[in-house]
Length: 91
Image (cartoon, rainbow, N blue to C red; front, side):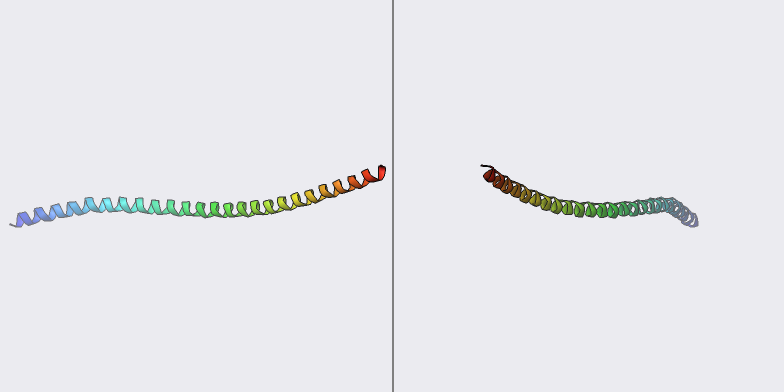
């Protein structure tokens, strides 16, 4: 009976040692995954900020382009007006 107890104790300790090594491996993998996750989160935040800057720049450029196009249209209208005035004077 005592021998059976020692055998069970041996199997239990053996299982615990093998299982403990698995836990260490799993913990190491989990720690590495957490580090990779943090690195990816940092990259994501950087990419999001760059995208926000790019979108803001595009919006500003679009507004500036619209303003320049409006100004160009007004100048063309003025040019047509003055050409018409000069055309009438030369007749």
